[in-house]
Length: 297
Length: 238
Image (tube, rainbow over all chains, first blue to last red; front, side, top):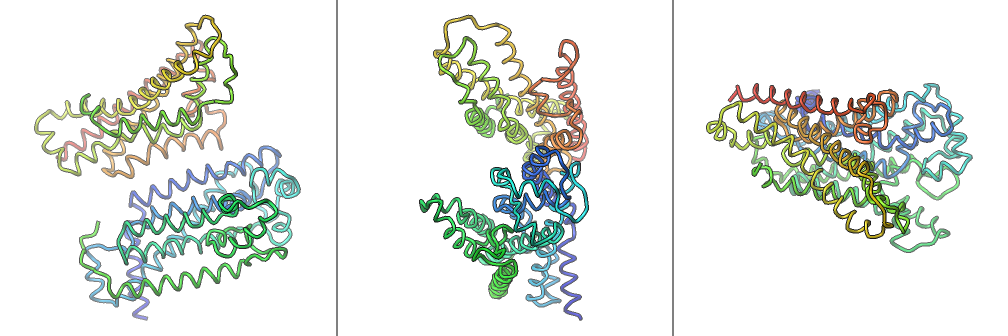
């Protein structure tokens, strides 16, 4: 019980000044602008068919795409630049609690901020498209038109018959949020590990490299690099679907009964394993971590 | 002025603006032989592209938008303010920041016009270029410059208010796009607060179109005045 109280106190301390920090404010405001740019396709579709869409459909169409996920997650690098949170108060905290509990508090802080950020992205996408949306949990006529026409493919809007048949908009967005959170958590945990192991710049570099790795393992990019033909794309999709973390976070790159791609559950399990491994590495690094500087920022 | 020309950011911003002009140039509209004056029309189209509109709130604030934060955090301001009066400092900084927003666009625009002339004018059929067309291109460049200046002043206001680089460089971009979002997603009729319209100048701005110039002039003055007031309040604390 005492341990939980200590961890909770450290998490609360991390959140102190969170909402007044200019860097945090800017990250959330930039994410608002980014959602505007990314939801442009969804609005184009709604305006083209001149029919309303379900409130979560713009979010599903926007963040069912790997590039959008990548751009959205990149802002997390700005959000988590100062990890692990050190301040003049940290030595007093460490005198009263174990280092492991302090690190656990950092991980919980990352988890809470990531969830908050993703829920914010969901809300903002909905608000930005609200003139053309309705709240009911039923796929719109626009989604059906998109799924059965070529326009969805031309605009790269991930609206497919298999998705519409297998789930509802609320459930689909919940699954996308889950995948986004998992991807964002791996990015943030990786940054934390590298920041503790080598330094702040290494943390940012690791975050950027992780994103670049995901981008390069995009089926279209990889097909261009490896000079693969259209009929060989299924091999590339299968390979990247399993090895790329970004594709694990992309809803459309999952198995809906026809492909040999990971299911949502398998992707979450893989992310959980990766997160566990990164957390273990962070705990190991903590033993040698130099708490020499407590000046804060 | 010399202080401003020594800023590497000014030349970097001008180079990025020029790159934006080159990337956004409507190459597909070049049909040889060109009609007389076509190079000016193409130049005007290049100045109104989305990429140039995107660059304005980023590149115009880059040279000296956060100069107050830089000078106050390094301690230079304390030495500087001893040598000149408070009013003189405010006058100098508001002008410096405003020009820091205008000049990168101006230099890039001027260089762009020169490049257009050198490469496209020889491809035109012999004919007379209407003075009206030249004047329209000059006014368009002036409008882009003014919007750049306003963005730089907004950056100066946030720099003085918060004393933070993130706020100084980020808020003009956010404010600019909030206006874009407001018009494109919620109020499609509200063109007067739409930055794209300030540059394109397509809607009704009064009988002679002078409304837009009054609007941009007043906006510049208001931003400069507000910047001056905030700076004055900050300098009182020193």
